[in-house]
Image (cartoon, one colour):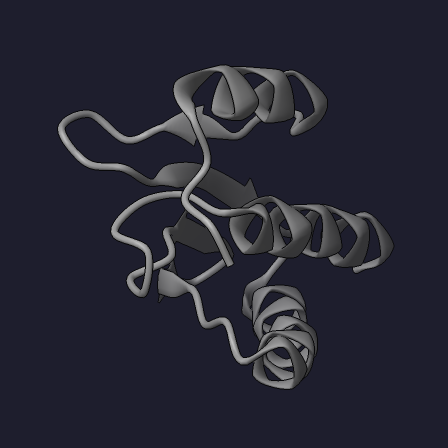
Length: 97
């Protein structure tokens, strides 16, 4: 997997609704809000299965019905297509929870 260029990142962000760059770090982030803790947990559980299959794991925190996610590819020292692939998977899972 290769590190994305700034132009590739800008193009990918246009397709990644609600995802933004993290200040001072080569990563993207998004905050998800669900109806309750159970829905947030179900989201995290479903994402965990997908992330594990991809061998690409998010940095995230959960407080009650909120999940804040940061994605970066440590192996390349920046953003890769894996980050945007996982972001799209998370968005799809969130839309079903």
